Amino acid sequence: MSLGLQVVAIDGPSGSGKSTLAKGLARALGWRHLNTGAMYRAVTLAFLRSAVDLDSAGQVESALASLELRTDAEERVFLGDEDVSAEIRGPDVEALVSAVSAIPAVRSRLVELQREEARNGPLVAEGRDMTSVVFPDARWRFYLDASVRERAARRKGDFDKAGRDEALPSVEAELERRDALDSSRAHSPLRLVAGVERIDSTALDAQGVLALVLAKIQEDPA
Ligand code: DC
Image (cartoon, rainbow, N blue to C red; front, side, top):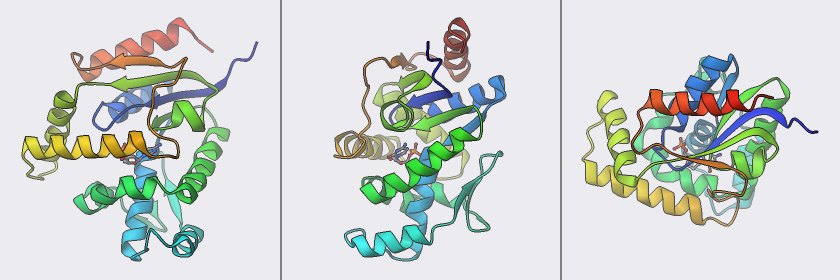
């Protein structure tokens, strides 16, 4: 019997609570947390800084060739030696990240880095294509969902905490825009694939989701 890769793979739309869940699981299991959305955001920031024309395959290739992207155990993201963890959460990156993450060359590069991480030991990996493309053979696979209204309210709460003033309707519209792009792109779209357990977190708080998923993992250990 194959036990599968020592990976908990989590996908879901923006604001569904993937990062909070993945962080909590990683802490509870003593495993590393890989936030692949942060990796796509960091590439987007690097492209913005060097004004890469996304329609130019040559410019994309050379920007990827010089990319020095690294994440650490404290969940920080670096470009070279610079900690860009805060900057990748800003509106400029947010507006462009779906377009950058739809580029096949970007995805192949990041998928390579993500699989390399899994070779360094057990991992809780979250994103949009963890269960479908990057780790289809993960031992545990979950799709975390919630209503768009609830996701927008959570995202607005994050923005408020970060001192970013955004009205709820515009947060909701931005989420819907990104959901549509992330689910309709040709390459590795966000989707619920067969064999992956869908968890609806609309009516649950973060602790409730964590307890539910931990129980499922413990019911079915490696
Ligand atoms: O999870 P997040 O909102 O930080 O992700 C930012 C963007 O990155 C999201 O709009 C889609 C993209 N993404 C992706 O295409 N594949 C992943 N595995 C993770 C994120």
